[in-house]
Image (cartoon, rainbow, N blue to C red; front, side, top):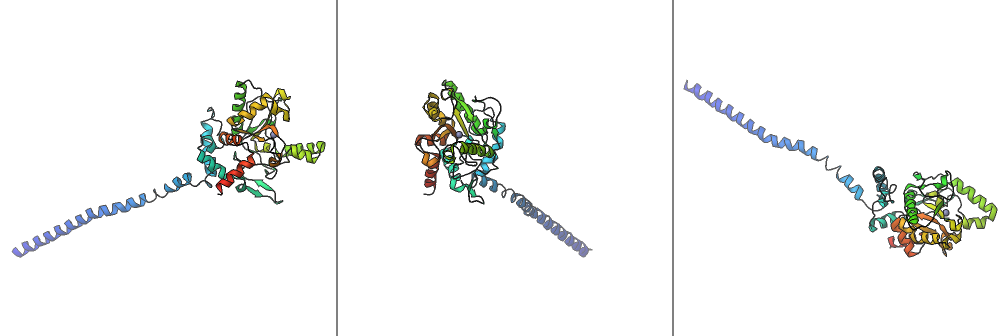
Length: 321
Ligand SMILES: [Zn+2]
């Protein structure tokens, strides 16, 4: 009897001991398994988050393209009523841009970085969506290029009826409205004469000028197809009653022409073909031809009294120092 009691008691004690140790093992294993579950869940989350955060803040050259397109969607629903003219299209320019941002944008849009050669070896401009595009006799737009956001600015024109040449790219059109509003306030009567021109239209204009005046004169006074700033949708020819709404040099001597030269930059435009700069631009002085480029750069170019070509040369020299 005693032996049995002792035996069963011993077994009981052993059993309790085993159960106890199992229970302990379980409580200990819980914390161990818990982290295992937790760690996979924490791993995935950190991975994705660093990637996006790097992309937006990234270097100055590559990302410029991304930011330009991303915000372009956001602004459109908000700012329609807002007066900030720089922006529905190229958001980096839209929000008040810091000087450092402009330098980065200009650096990314240097002419030497934004072209390809076609089968004939002609230089075709590739940064077509940028306000900083440089088109001239050496740098062409492709024959198929048409700006995507052409719109008719709400300004007085020198002619009535609808016409493709009333159009400009949206941001430029808003800026033109602001320019004309300011002119009206100063009792300056300006009228828009000619904006967007397709490759085909430019082709027939050049041909007609060439037929009338000879190719040499046509070359100095009109652009060959693909070489006109009017195809960018960023240019508008402007005149006044005092100049008979003609596109003539004497417009520059009128009150309106002088007002335009003085105030265009405040609204983001430059007088593109300056007097005395024919050898650089390849074109005669055109006081009527204004080109949109954004306020900050327009003011800078106007203050420096340089052509767009010279301006980019300076930026290029600074960047490549
Ligand atoms: Zn023009």
